[in-house]
Image 1 (tube, one colour):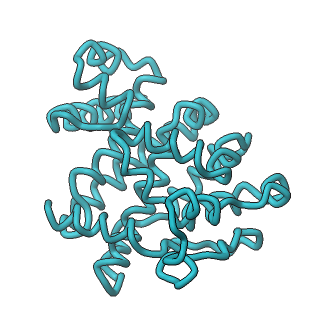
Image 2 (cartoon, one colour; image 1 turned 135 degrees about the horizontal axis):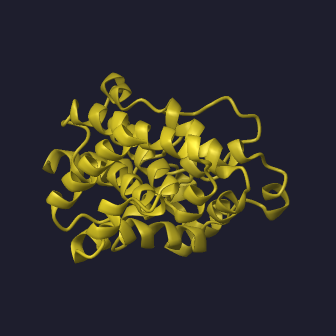
Length: 245
């Protein structure tokens, strides 16, 4: 488990521009990248945020697919995990990065995030050549899961795609568990967070009843697992829900 957190920490310190990149013509090329002399010369964190701002003139013309790839390449994407909860992390990222704000405003963001998530195979981490690359690979999956867990995104999916997403979360979680060197409890929780929020949104009675439990509700609201029995419960509820719907 400690090794997993170390891998994630490495991912937050390197340039996150590889791994899952798709051929999209209008991905923003950040002019200042982690690890370069220009980056190291930036004196404050605010200077780094300013350097990573996408010109407003480009934002409105970029495709949603381009914005998704730009989001994944954002040099400060690791900010998702430096706040108290993933929910706070994505809210702060929207405040600090105009690309994230624009992405989550797009009307077609939900099905395109689902398409992106479908293309991401957790097993691919094994082919990465270093701990840094493995961390980058796994962290990008988590980042897409955090986006998909947003209530505004889930509300924009129709019933067919909602069920497809729930099925995908089962598949991704099972794949992650086959590679404990790369994936651990933190990674499992972002997958389970989607499950919990879908079940809530679907008004699934067992999930609604479970929300009376403080730890279950905190996980559903914020994406933090205070007790892994809660995650096990969510996974079991998801399996039962899919068997009946």
